Length: 292
Ligand SMILES: Nc1ncnc2c1ncn2[C@@H]1O[C@H](COP(=O)(O)OP(=O)(O)OP(=O)(O)O)[C@@H](O)[C@H]1O
Image (cartoon, rainbow, N blue to C red; front, side, top):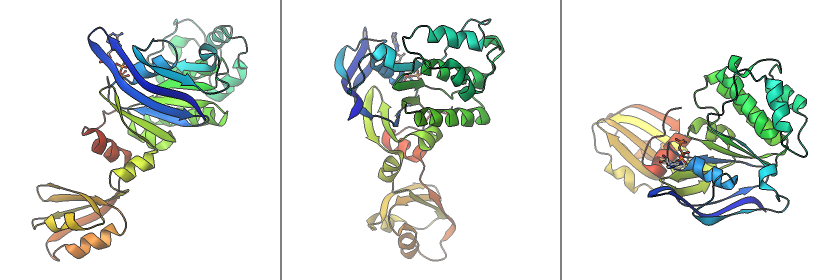
């Protein structure tokens, strides 16, 4: 049974429609991604789920066992900031005091690998993000909402944060992950809702969305000759031409089918690539993802 079900969520600020019509269900124990470009309504959606904002219309339902949203959903908000002089240990102890049955914050310190005596001002970007994850977990939540956790981090800090998110799931916590970083989706998410302009375009596994975008296979080559015949092949999903360069996506024995249909001697630089979640996102939304 779904631990969170969102039905036709809509949120407006005056004339501004931040979330138009969003529905999805999060299963217990999964890492569920909310993915989309900046400003499409991701944060507003999860703030409505966490009870921080009141939807203009629509319903957010919680599965059995999730009875107290404020206590059982931990949220790490984008750009979380703490007083400069507050030490890591003091922050965790303070946040733990807000909850009736907090987690052991000293054990959480081990997970995030931080020294409790270090002041917030002295933490690097990656360390601040790891602290904000720990603060989201200190209430012993059933669900952790993590919003744009790795934006602005260097590649190593990003990978460390991904490892931490995987450990959070291993602790039995369901994760609702807001991101516009496509590699993060492929690496972490069991399922994902792709949002554009306040609406859900698709909900599926990352592989399922890649499959929709061309079956995980892509062939790139150069030719000056005609390629129209490729579109009639059953293995071919899309053919895109940009000058001499042709990109073909499809399924099954795509390479054999494409090579068989091309005129020998007119093709150069043929290579195969795996379709990525970037391609799937582009195919769904018609826009490339923003860089992190
Ligand atoms: N309190 C508010 N008042 C007015 N407009 C708002 C408010 N909060 C958000 N918005 C607008 O609603 C839209 C959706 O914002 P939201 O922060 O939910 O998007 P997002 O997908 O999370 O983007 P980002 O990744 O940049 O945070 C944006 O156009 C934003 O400017």
